[in-house]
Image (tube, rainbow, N blue to C red; front, side):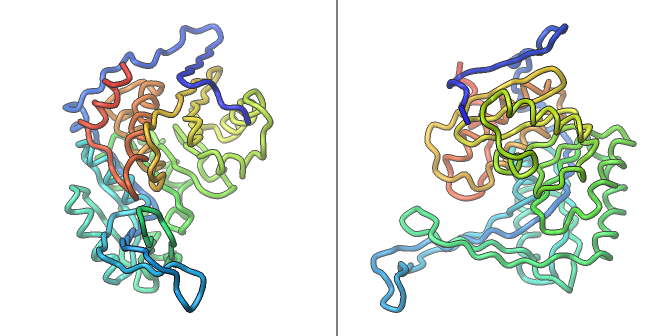
Amino acid sequence: MKSMPAGTQQERAPGDKPEAAGSFAFDADALQRARILVVGDVMLDRYWFGEVSRISPEAPVPVVAVTRTEERPGGAANAARNAAALGAQVALISVVGSDPAGERLAQLLAAESVQARLHRDASIDTTVKLRVIGRQQQLLRIDFETTPSHEVLQGKLADYAEMLEHCDVVLMSDYGKGGLAHISQMIELAAGRGRRVLVDPKGSDFTRYRGAALVTPNRAELREVVGAWRDERELEAKAQQLRRDLGVGALLVTRSEEGMTLYREGSVRHEAARAREVYDVSGAGDTVIAVLAVMTAIGAPLPEAVRIANHAAGVVVGKLGTAVVYPDELQRSIDDDG
């Protein structure tokens, strides 16, 4: 696959004047008026940091002497905290277990000004991702997860219908953990009340997201759905066909070092990657869709929202682990770009 040249932006809208990016000023004060409802799979990200100085005599693996630990909200909870870090009013609906990890996740979200309704399911353990870090590199990740029960998910749906009245944009973060079993119904409910839905997808069945305003697959996720492509022309054809088949307003493909490409009816816009230094890509997709949701909520044209989200991605990959972008960091990146 050929990447587009650095700095390239491409827009084609036959018979219409292109909607130019850069026409909407980034306004930190306006962000506080945004009301975002996040729904999806949450998890607790645990980090064990340590020193590596020898190889185990028991097996050919490094020995990590743990010196400190951290816990951060992950998954949909990371998307929620990213929106809150920008100053938006954020509510989150999800499912956790009746366990210490679920309690800890609730505490972390409250500390980051996220209004969380976490339904407790005694039959599951809260999803936990444990990462072992040595010499500033991830050495191992261990996942603990189970699927929530149908009864708890049905109760979450009732909360969702109520909270739709108090949001501007709905962000759905699908990590394939079972928390969005009713996503088709949720999108339909939101559309019926005039709320735009942005979806960070997972898996090979994108028909679940039919009717969303925007779907944001990464390169690997898109390939799983439409198959491989040989060049930009074939990628565009496959992306646009998928967008039409799903009846979604736009498809934003995040492409790692190749940046991101926005596909809409009759138009394509590419944003080259802006990262100065890539340190850790964990959670970058959460940051992108969170920024898109907030910018959409305050009325930014979609190409401009994508431009700003691209800046946010460039900032967050320079941080270790799941992280957030603050307004001053985002403004500095935008200013540096001229």
